[in-house]
Image (tube, rainbow, N blue to C red):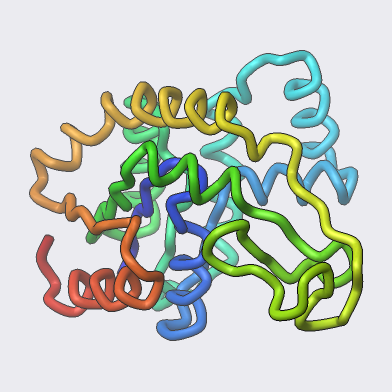
Length: 218
């Protein structure tokens, strides 16, 4: 089974993808993770990606598709794929169709995690982590049991991501809507789009996604 997970940053795509990897043996292919790994490893593609991203230019669609194809070729045909962060444009959707057809794969589901913008702003801007072990907390939803002390490692230093602020979150939401608007109709026409309440409890979202995958239809 091959699926696309859609949703703005903070919607919980990463959490749900990780759970699908654990529970169903699927493979998550995140274009962002793939490029960051290539940059870190210093591969030829990584050097090219680093140069392109530093210049502020967009990574060429054809090159990204080629890299994705190489990762797909490393997988067993029986391994389901979760596409995370791809496709984002009509051209990328076309290229993904070509990648899938060339490998005798089909796209079974496009699952969008719907979010409420105001609630998402509250969710993201309240996040902070232990600077030592990375345990996650939230101003409203998950405070340390002992004020100022990490539950996990008992450290006393915490940090927040600099981009976890309201202006950035709203910009990301606008970008997400602009990017997904062109591709959703493509998949809706095929009858494979399903939507899940991304603001629900994480376990409830997991159950909802499982229900979509298990019933076979969108």
